Image (cartoon, rainbow, N blue to C red; front, top):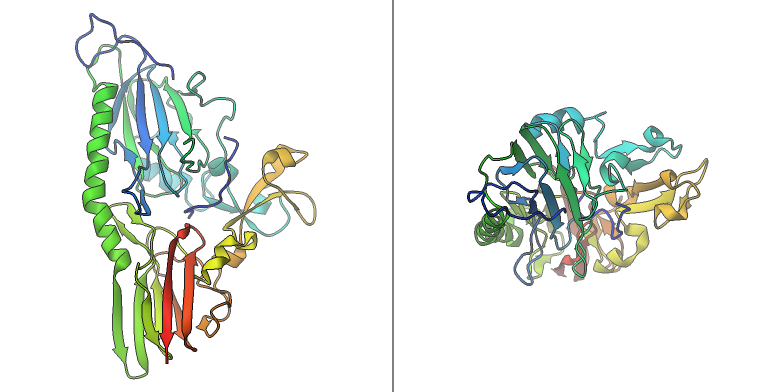
Length: 382
């Protein structure tokens, strides 16, 4: 369910040489393949590409290394290798209710006593925090799950996660545990079998990102910018999409232009496949109390606030708690004071939050999941 779950970095190769005698596309030594996790949108566009690039089957030799290069602007992801050739079947078994990789779990499942909902440590944290660098890749043996843990974008130093593919010949998959549909088959072949080179794979990835930008990004953007008006005998209803989504490209934005309404009108925010909130006023996003994820050291009774596992006497007691003040709507959804806190709760498909314009004024709003880049205004006139 996560979008931007927190602005905090969680504690989360081998470059081979081409043998001169080998035929094109056939390598006798380990090669490093770069897989981009998400991608960079055009300047000024708050889009998230909920894809790996390449987003089609990746074929590698046994012993090759995959460099999962995170390239997002505001959206966290995981890079998770699974033993299944069918990622959807794997998700159904492992990410459903009670599954070992269910995204959110009650804290009692991790030894807590606060009746809170936490990010499943199996999702949020690396499967092995002692590996994953270029000189020390984690090993995927074909029967295990290798997970990077949730990684957050950092334009100054984007994270990477390296995995050596030591699995038997066969088909597997890698996916993001946070975003359904973000998955790619992984085909492992024997030495001597011709496969696309790392450079060819990178070229394909670049073409796919360009296509996603020029087609799906623009479509998602248009959805996010569309405001529909329904006239009724008691006032108008303004329907605003909470972002836009096309083929797993998410436009994390609200309308660029203010939405002008009259007193008595309704503004309905419609949930989309990527999670968002509509929260008044815009300044709400600056208050730590409104963070989607809050961090604590689990202990009997009241938990202790923390910033990282190092703050806990037992680092395994560090937990990420979903903030109920963000997940649930406020009791009042009336726009009668531009400074009053009003929150839609988490907007997902099938969820609609209706605000009623009561008093004239300019009301700013923001998404608490994606931050100040996803903001707009409601102008209420008499």
